[in-house]
Amino acid sequence: MKSLAKRFLPVLGLFFILPNASVLANGGKGKVSRYVDRSGPIEISIDLDEKLFLLTSVKNKYKVLRIKIKNTQSKGLALSKTNDKVDLLIKEQRVSGILDLAKHDSPLWDSLDADTRNFLAYPETVPPNEEESIFVFVPLQSIVVIPTAVEYTIASLPEKIRLRPPVARS
Image (cartoon, rainbow, N blue to C red; front, side, top):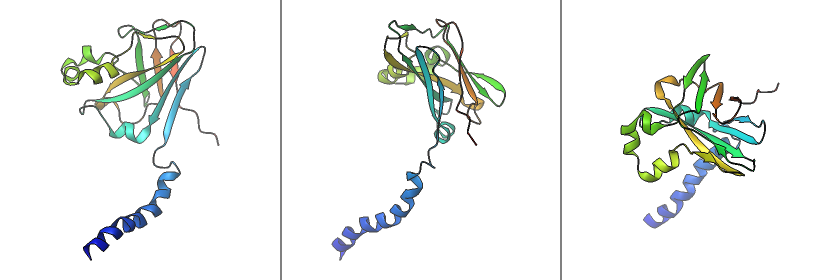
């Protein structure tokens, strides 16, 4: 009798789970906002899962925003953790992001293992025809809703980049 119950338990579990799986299949559980700027040979984008962004944090201190930079130029794009800047526009307020967590919060940075620090460190360049991800740390108390826009200043570029999610069409 016990072996029979063991065989049917997984089947019964599927019976209860599968009717609810359709809720997940339509994308209703994980809407992602895509912020994009494609002006020129540099494409910059952010894929922001609104719910996860608001629910998760690093050590209950920071939200993390991942910005992808795709360099389609034949030369590298110079980045600078001291001269570049990211601002989030949240409810008509400007919130500065942190690009150099090692300098801003060295105890937290030092608590991370070497692989994680390498992964999160702000790169010095985006090589030609390559893509890099940068990670922006935003103080937890500054975020109550997702940003309406993100402004990214790369010192080696002539203009500030403004990223916004697409406007919903009616």
